[in-house]
Length: 258
Length: 275
Image (spheres, helix red, strand yellow):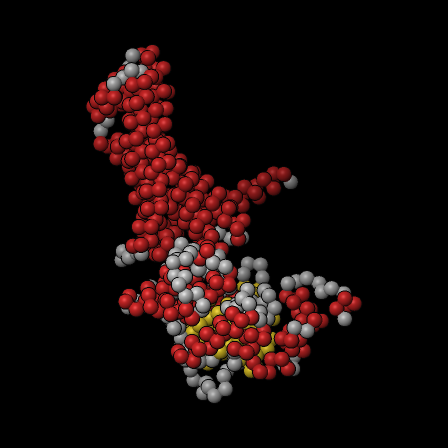
């Protein structure tokens, strides 16, 4: 009896995950279809770029600063033990550019912008605003989803680049304080040991993460059911979906390019 | 059943529904609904709550496709049409939603201007048309406000302004006066009447305010349990042969309450209380 119930629950959950994954994929196809020929509401795009990108800069800068500093604090014990001061810049830059920067800023972006986007679209859905758009012969995918997807990809790439740079500044400051390493020493260690490909690896990841967050947040926002309670559930599902997607896609991209 | 205005030759119907059936996962909302509204006609739809009135409007607007039956709106078969054709019909239709459906990220002015901006109207005339329309619904000078700053009644009036600003051939109003005081209700119906007289368009109004809608519409249809229970001239509504329709229209306590009770699937209170 317990086994049957467990299997039933497991089956139902699997079906729900498969349905949502399929729904996100269909939404991706609809977005791609809406881009041919390329036409969208420019004002919506600019509004979203401002809201999602510009207003996220302070929190990204603050987080990245501490993350960069934290990397050095974690490395400090080993650097002191082995005297590997020349590798601090490489270690910090490698980790920040390729993994920590895109993932951490992606997750933060998902929590701030993705959740907000889901709440906004879900509220529009439950208050008939999406129907209102359709009643005015406006395609909600073209008008609402496409500008948001593009804005999120552009913003997350830009924020990741900003975050990378700020994290390095944090690392430089902390390595001076904790390890007495001059910032220029760290900088030369970084540029001598890292290539443009390391930097671009993170940029590519942030593009993919941006698309995943956008599609997840738009999908759960547009398919919400159950009024105000449903809005909360949709936000929850979107954030969880985006986080899982980010981790999975990160693994996939790292594995395939290793 | 036919909702046809006196004098209509029967050639140009704005809305023709034939055996329309709509169901959702848990229940059937509309069953075999057949209605016809001639061009220039004014149809009022009444009935108990949860009787399928709003769903019927969404079917006419092309927002819901029926499970069965035919939906012809402004000469197009929406049940079988491709999305592009449905969108083309929607541009000729104005709709007011029950809970306004104002875009909360746009100002009042931008909301009202939306059908004009996205409908290809010349940009130079839009501001004046929006101002005139807002003046018409008693909200002059409120262009810069956000929907969140308005009361429910004001939102309703902005919704009416948005639905009518492009002078649609077919206007669909879902509870246009719910939550409004009697004076504003009267003004709103005067406005709808004046609009219609000017444009010659067709109106379909869903309303719980039976007296007000009967004063506006030339034909009334009553929906009950998802079916058309009665269709006839508005003037005959209060003396309809069907006792259920008559008592509902008159708001008579015993039978009207029973109708409502069945609609919301609760047992009516004991006869002693209601006799």
